[in-house]
Length: 135
Image 1 (cartoon, helix red, strand yellow):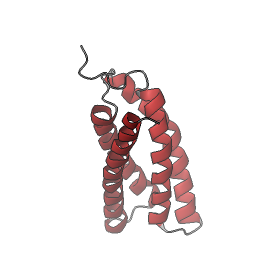
Image 2 (cartoon, rainbow, N blue to C red):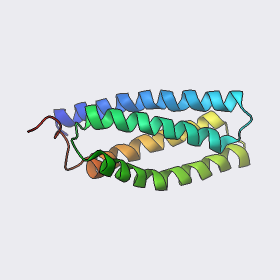
Image 3 (tube, rainbow, N blue to C red):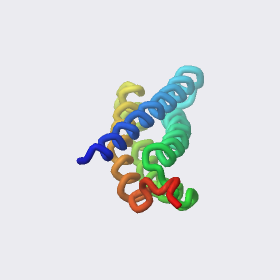
Image 4 (cartoon, helix red, strand yellow):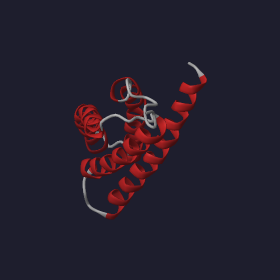
């Protein structure tokens, strides 16, 4: 891995941490201040963090000039698989098995971080990395 890719990964990590703070903050507010079950709290928090993370990573990490609607559709395809799986699994672990909701959300966040980086790096922005600003 060259230094440019290491810097790219570190940027993705930083923005993912900020998105994680958004996700955990929204999840905690909904979990503690409402009587909602696990899945609506998780799903709302996930959607907000995805919008945050996608926007920052497209512009600063991958520096992509890709067609935004196409890139968003590709990201949506990832979340069309990831979201139902982790929502159902999270609901089962938290409500069915009695696992701590924050532990379950943390596990989902780590899973999301690792798979999303690879998906965005090689599929969503793979051919358009560092194309922003080029004439």
